[in-house]
Image (cartoon, rainbow, N blue to C red; front, side, top):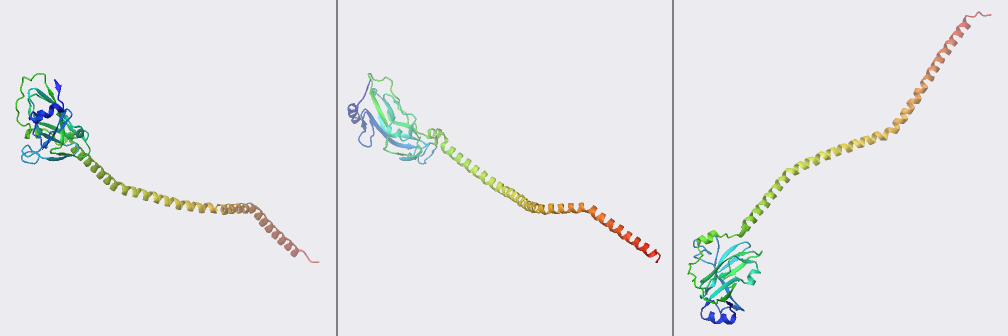
Amino acid sequence: MGLLSDNDLGPLLAQGVLVKGFATAPRIRGAAVELCIGDIYVPGIKGGDPGSPRTPLNALSLRQGETAVIRTLEELALTQNHAGIAFPAANVSLKGLLMTNPGYVDPGYAGNLHVTVINMGREPYLLRRNDSLMRCLFFKLDSPAERRYPPLPSPIDDALLTRLTKDFMNIKARALGEAEKAIRTAELRIKWTQISVPVLVAVISAIASVFITFKGMEKRLMKVEATIPNVQQLDSRLGTMESLLPLEQRVDTLETQTIAEIHQRLERLETKPKQ
């Protein structure tokens, strides 16, 4: 078994062997033949809507996480002496387009290849008819394969597109869920603000009232403290006066005794006989 090079591929392709149905001249790269995007189908689409099995698309902008099914533009036409291996083109994979089922192609296979693709990149990926999609290597067998590959109808039908999901891993639904969660959080914050602000204002008002009352009491206390020296002086004067009270009583007693003695002496003088 040997891998076919461009020298081997050119003549075979010209005879309609291995690959046919090129829109332009065959694109041969070293030992590979380039296959391009043909019909594009969208999972979840039914009936005659664009992207359904009966109405494929020629172009589709595939957003992050979205899937599509692609039928190659070219048809393979392998003989019993040839087998193939298909794989994504490098320029496609590097942009984030993931293919789920390229691989081995049996000897004798005839028909288009079909792959499911997922946009794993952040930016939308534009799928367009005739754009590069895959490359296929072909091998010549040492002896022809005995079992012939049976012809099969197109695998693209409503059942297939219903089974596949349009949004890989529900990225869109998860994004909407996160958005709804953010909205609910914002609404709760607004409600909390509506409740807490009046309470906070009331608390601040109460604190301000207590503070004003305290300041008033503080001013009154300062006035009282300012009068303390005068009070102390008054107290000292009262103490002095209280200490002088016994002396005043003595003076009163002496005055009373003196007046009484004077009266007595006057009376004696008046009653004494004259000479």
